[in-house]
Length: 244
Image (cartoon, rainbow, N blue to C red; front, top):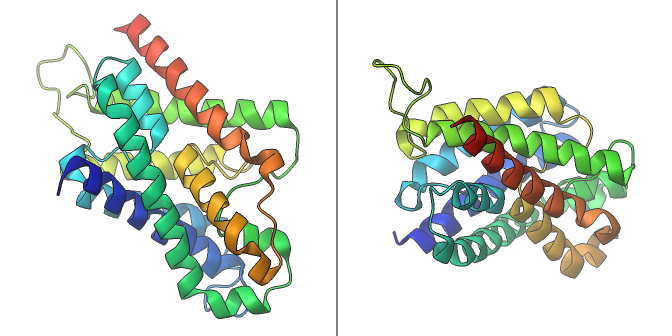
């Protein structure tokens, strides 16, 4: 695949499996109903693993924050940033549509608007825009800062026996474990979007189809999972440069 299609397909699979587990847990009448946060965070980690495996041709960014963070750190060409982000948003929107297709009957019988919205995008446990923004910045900072060390070709810079790890198939497991850790430790405040495409593209899809099952997209909050991850990615690149 071309890098553009690699990012598109990879992000589509990421959202299909990631938002799919949310739908399975929160929608009425599903086999996985009420199975909880551990199931959601674990399946999101597996979704990252699978998505990274199939998108090695592009470096498996799958996230505008990753693309921007790598570019800001000098590890990715700025000229390729916009095409990657476009592919990520398209793939994310397609993934959201597939989740809706799979769970359409359950959307129809679920009364809880927040539960239905959660199958597309994030929202905070306690709405406090300043603290919600900080949560997304910190979560994304951890994601990008660690990824920068992974793509830096070694976990322990300067050691002779450092293990080379990439963001392609060999790096799929470390990245999945990283996302799992962030979800378990830092995800309880905002649902850890840490990815503008993962949130805003499905939110846009919800804008067009939400009337079918009485669910609003809540764009009043939508800027947080976009601006927070971008700020966190840039901050991670700056700190990485200071330390290296």
